[in-house]
Length: 290
Image (cartoon, rainbow, N blue to C red; front, side, top):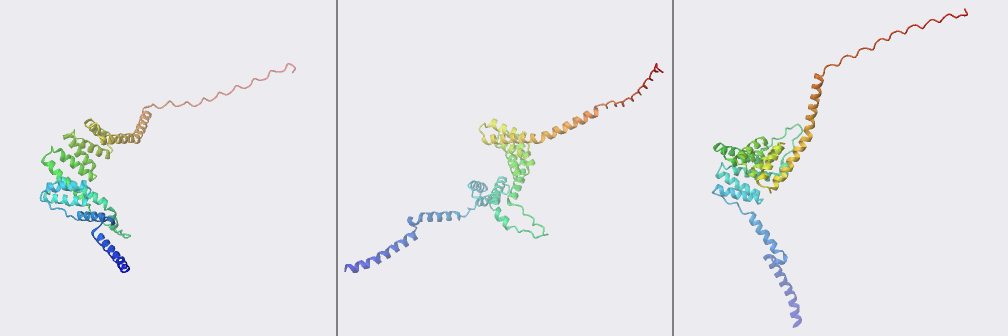
């Protein structure tokens, strides 16, 4: 009887172990990394959560800014586009949208290069389409100008106009807008730093130094201004080293030319005098023995 019981219990115990194993796997027991699987599933659900449809432009803009700061670029683009749809003149939304598109374009640049076909020999290359980031920044510029037309004292509009122009590499126009912002609100360190950085792009290092020094007068602990001031000073010295010697050479050459023109011609050297012929030797005296 005991032999039958023992022989029966062994396979039954094996079947029971298999059943427990199957249940554990299906329920995600911790023995087999069930917690990690559950976490991955939760993350997948979170990623698939659709963006809410906003009815207020300010709420959509604020959510877009938050998502952009959190690194959720695609969701930020969605939220900012909603803000623009609700308020087509929202200049700040266009500016942030330009930043978001620029980040996405930088991220996807490899795929874009692969998707661009190589032109055949003799075939003109296809005209590149304007990037979404460029379109967004251009529209931001137009709306900031509109704000300035309505209120020329709006220093924030001048400042943001300068930033948008900067993103379009329109540095001269950007510097003009930022100068106006600083003129209207000289104690804003962000304005001063943005102006100085733009002037450095234009190699106007001395003026950039003034902006950074003003920043440090307002905020002596501003590390960014300290670093940029050092770079501006180095740029100015480098420019002086490469440009000034050429100017000095030009001045030296000009001075030499002017000196030569003003100096009177020297008197001509007289030809050497013709030597007088030597007198003939004296005749010998007659001999007394002749």
